[in-house]
Amino acid sequence: MSCLLYNLAIEPLLESIRSSPLEGFRINEGLTRVLIKAYADDTTVFLGPRDNPADLQKCLDTFCKASTARFNDTKTEIIPMGSVDSREELIQNREFNRWEIDEAIHIAREGEAIQILGSWQGNGIKVQDKWNDILERQAKTMKRWNQLYPSVAG
Image (cartoon, rainbow, N blue to C red):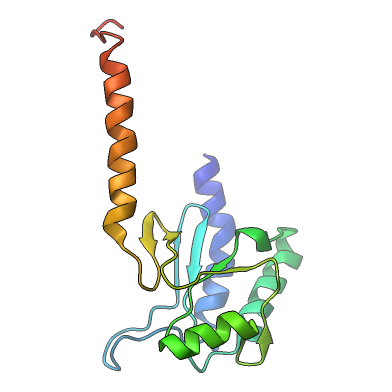
């Protein structure tokens, strides 16, 4: 029941962002924009190069006032897009379209993976390395379980 209630509670925020002036991210001009993706309590917002982060902040502030929710800046992460130089400039200056990025917000560096909706994303990352770690941990768990001589009844 709590998952359903959460979905009902978060939908006004998602709709507010969808109907905002934010353009989001487009791979090609003919394709639909990617602006916001959400799964359970994990939400990802894609800002385009001309987007004003103040528009996003306005949606977040309005939602927080209406719902008494609070966002945890320390769980907020940014993956810069664009050329290597523009990404490095964002990391160094902590600024995007005249919006100063709070120090509590983590900005992923080149080669650093961030988990988004269950998958590892980032610039210059080796996704296979992350999956190898997961598979290795899983193999250790299975080996440990096997040593317990599992049975149908057990």
